[in-house]
Length: 387
Image 1: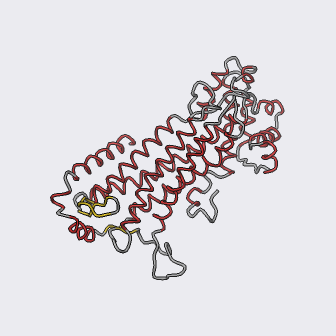
Image 2: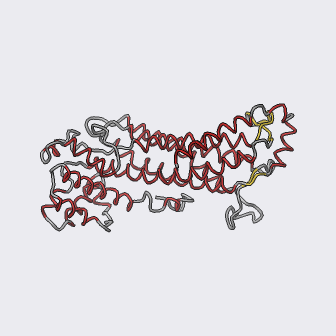
Image 3: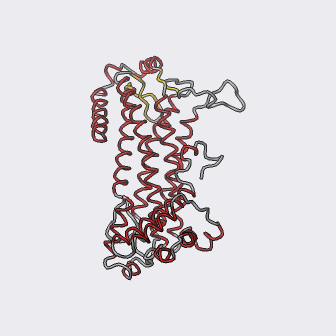
């Protein structure tokens, strides 16, 4: 995760790395054992022995073992069974599950944590853009179509358009988060092994979902990958919205335009060759994230088309790095965009001067103010709902 070629990756530090994945998989195993207890497949002592073994423990898995197993679940289950002191409790670990159940559910848990972070930062971005839209409701600026001056618009309406896209993306993320499912099917999606230890394995699956605060969708989705592609699409829509905002800021911040500028932070944006230069780093990085997101979502859809048989042979594996990278990109970009929006400096004098060259603002801005007000009403209503 991250590294020197992913500037800003520290903003997702610890959220999506291997240690976080291991902890999520352990949470899944504990939740399953408790669900077994709840539905008669394990004793309370067994369930608590497993939970106790996991507390404060984040094992480092041997990459060679992960390769031999084809995924990280088997090495983790082996280590967990060895760690559980009660032999009877150790035999309960993972009973009725398959590797895909654990890893799919663990990735949903990681995604939930990431979505929470993204939504918080989208909220910060929305608040900053709402302020700009309100303050500059009537500030004229040159409209641009197909790269050329068109007729005057207002900066308030420009900010309102950015805001509306952020609100759309946030709504999409919320819808995905409400529907996040557990995966629970066993070896071939029949719950057969669970049925050997509980009277009603479907009830156990539902209890499993409740333990994790996820949704039981009624049957396994080993080969129906819509939960993954919908998540990827929502993340990409978010990056789309952030990318348009960043790209517009980069254009308006060019020296020959000079209508906006990133907030100044000591040491940020320095050039290695030109000491006088200050690069718009946040805009550049958000723009870069937006350009990378669509191919990752496409990878998820491509994998979904090859999720064959009862469990797929490689298509499932192809999802993992794409999904994690897309989550990381969006977490980082959302944080950077929030900082960009919050610190954005507006040169309304430059906007007015250039607007006058494009026509008479009084004649051309139309009902811009009313359109801004409509977006601001939507924003305020959303805040009331969140409260």
